[in-house]
Length: 248
Image (cartoon, rainbow, N blue to C red; front, side):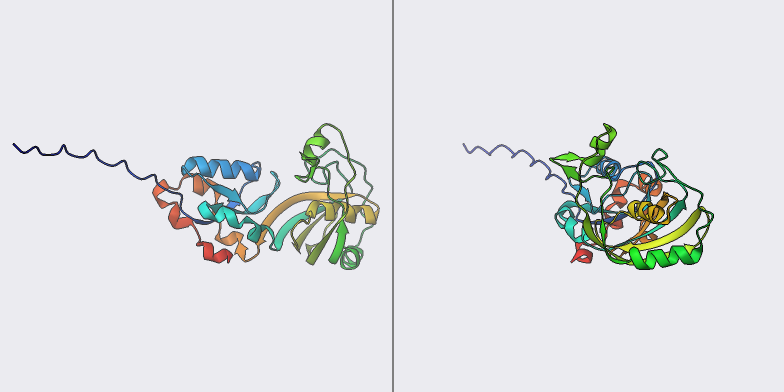
């Protein structure tokens, strides 16, 4: 008598791997860059998601997310130059150098002319400059982010860093608020530029608003607003990704 072998058990389905690519997101105010990464990972059930350079929670604009094998190429995004649109507010310095901080001294800026502001930017805040990183930043001292030390009321010595400002334009002059457009290298703090300009002018100043419009060759016009991303069907996610070749 011949026996037929029992039917083989069905093989388990292979796990679905993450797609590989670059996702451009227009980040809203109020979210950290890590918040966006976590949300995208959960919404689309992904294993590997990272970003190519942080944006402050109050800032909006282009956040470059890297998915799958793209996470290995984050330095290619972080190392590129960035373009920001912002608001320089004269007359008040703050503890964080932006609108989130407490007042930290200031003076009437009404005597500042457009010519004086443009001349100062051209002489002291364009090309190679040494910039002292702010305490409220993600830089680390002995493994601890500076912003955590700042929350405890601590201030530690920081070394000035060489950064490059390719262009710094006053798009619309006003007192106290002027609209600015800055194209700069990796590691440049636009709020520190505003703080230092206010200090040089003798009236104090801070960054009252910031939007990142460009990271290297990537533009915010090509990014998906985060609200639209939340409504995107999971099946359509991969189609939103740019190929990794855009980073090479």
